[in-house]
Length: 196
Image (tube, rainbow, N blue to C red; front, side, top):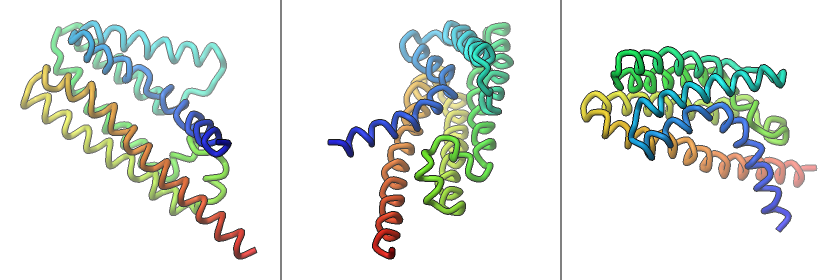
């Protein structure tokens, strides 16, 4: 039972900063799915993005590059969407956002910020880089598929896609990596204990 409690605690510690980084995108996708109104979702997504940065500034917390990039994309493409009443700007924004986030994730060991010390102290830089490299591949794939669906099948199909797949894919990868990293770290620590 203690093992389960520890697993839930470490999982929540890993998920919390990731959810904070993606808050405006998550709310945007939920609003699109619930209301089907791109313009309402865009306006609220912009407000959430601005509010999130304002709260972090007010609390004196650091604002990471991915949060600044996300806010800039939300403001620019959200404004274009609202001004021109053209949801294609949101489609392009999602594509650019996924490419930009994927590009930011190309930095070796970017995941270290989200991992507990036992993982970063146990795994080698090469192993951490391998786990980190899976994320930009996923982001680039999501960007390409999102753009294709939006331009080929229209806003309705894109809204369904953007409300489901980009939200589910990171959780699937996160779950798979969580299990793999947990197994990997435990096997290394067990081997070290046997060698000692």
